Length: 370
Image (cartoon, rainbow, N blue to C red):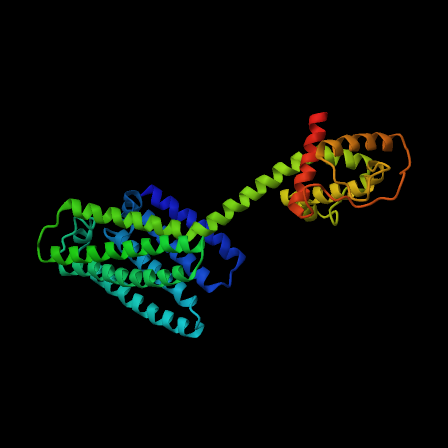
């Protein structure tokens, strides 16, 4: 139960972050509300939360709140797909009709729960007396609606999964399997209710297996809807770590060039606190350092070229590092530039990544020589 709640909370935090960035996104708002209802239902279902609610509002209130929240969760899940449909107007009309259906079911199970003594309604699904019609209707009605809504959501998810590409399709398939398993678990529970209403005993291991299936399927669904976003965050983290590492590896080259040409060191656009804070970001510092190194290499190029060199410098990193040290010493002595500055073509290629790779190699050579 704790693992499931942790997964739901993680998914909810991620969707709340996305909703903050896109507050007018109706499908995103629906899936966020779905997770809010699902996450709120579990503390109420836990022994401590249920006993606290029942102590204040009477026995069975926690169970009623939990089931209503679950009904709302699957309703908002359906709304996500309805708002995502190509015909937005038809989707909104269908969402209003589904709202009426879930309202009728919620009112019906509430009336059923309130029509029996609180003591009878106390207990769990496995211990409830299903021979009482109101109790059987409470669990059976909620279970049938959950089966319907989850089945429809599973069908729509599979359709979107077939239309999508990785990694989105992977997450959608996981969510579809989770939804299908949830629908199956709710259907089995509805059958169990009918069997027990007929005063037939159901084996305890079967009910435990159904409960485990329900928990596992909800966790799989939560993982599925956050899979693509989590992968994107992991990729972003890897890029952040690489830029941070490369920024540090460029330090020897940058320090040599910045000492020779301090005017090439870029400053924030303004002295405002926000601009200074943004300028300290890893990606900004990384790209700024590359630009500063390239500008410095252009400025120092007259001191790097020998008499027999052309404007294009195609030497290896160790030789270029040695020339940079000699050029820095000449600049420190105040010697004038012997020729005009020219752009340098790196030996590893002309694309940006090859350029960065060679800059890092030169910087590493400078560090090793030091």
